[in-house]
Image 1 (cartoon, rainbow, N blue to C red):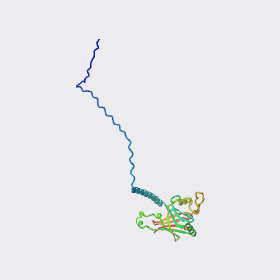
Image 2: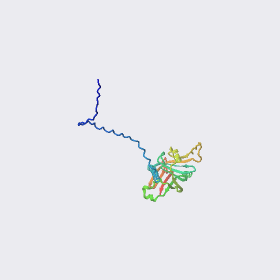
Image 3: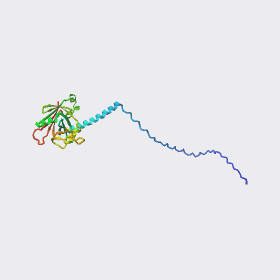
Image 4: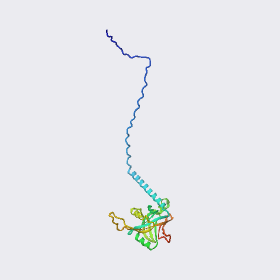
Length: 248
């Protein structure tokens, strides 16, 4: 049987019928890759003048806060205060006023009067201490800017009518605060505090502290005058010690 070879001719058919066209596929959404952004560059350093201005502004804000705290302390001092006179045997007299035994001093001055001389005056009878300071005329015209009486830095001192040099306002440092803490339990009295111990455990020579502590009645006459009268526990007789503050 003879094998018949069949030939297939491939041709493109042309038809008038519409061919089915598949709808175009939606494009694939692009995947967004968030690359980490580099950190912003540091701000340029402040110019020297501007840096100084910022420093001064911060310093002023600290002083303002301290001034407000001190003003609040003076406003809340009250009509009865705790007064303490103290000083080393060969040193000057310190006088401080506190609202109560544990509060920060609202007033602390150092007198040029030796503590030994004040003790002799008190042994002879009543003691009157007068502290005078001058008005600042420019600030008197602007009452809002004038200092409070207890904030005056320099005073002329008189003891029983005799001039005794000057008194200077002081900040309560470590030594002064140590004395006030030592006499904190004492409401009224006088005595001597032993000297501080050195690192080796020995007493520091010449550092004994004499003190007198009492409650004082505060009387405000005006913006430029105040008086502090030591209160006797038995309420009899005149006060042994009076302190007068005058701005003239």
